[in-house]
Image (cartoon, rainbow, N blue to C red):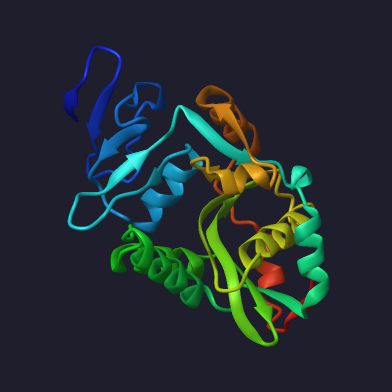
Length: 247
């Protein structure tokens, strides 16, 4: 169902009740750039389907759910992660360890709290509930970084096929989120993850090896890397180990 249109090519779509309703990415608005649809819900079925097509939700309460598919996409190929001299130095200084999926609720909670302190958060209670459910289903995952037995950094996102869709990261100690991402990139090959979606560019991500690619290229990559919306079994298996692993 069409809600409004900026011109014949670009239009904002109101999602139907069907969780498989799929907007046309090429018709996403140019202002705000990448906004493609409004409404729907955060059911696991809809989230899994729309992620597989390159869409992600990003909105603030009490606004309705907004779905995005940017014209320029920020991605990271795991093997291209850049480890700076300062990051190498930080890794040598502490007893860094990591876990996978041991503290998912804590990670998403930290991501939300840090953004409330800085600029307000889009990680609402509804978002938390939806992604915790995805984690329980085996689609959402968290990477946790520990320093001296304390949780100090990490991130969470959605994995399917050979793609990981990063959502948000946090750091309570300098370099902790960078170390979390480096650790994940090191694990990526064993998990058959070939592409990390970073969604929107930032200087932080670009300094770590991320790059911008056109929407058309990103969509083509998704078609090749997600032939079915299957869970990443290797990442799930790593997450079954409750013990902290050295970095």
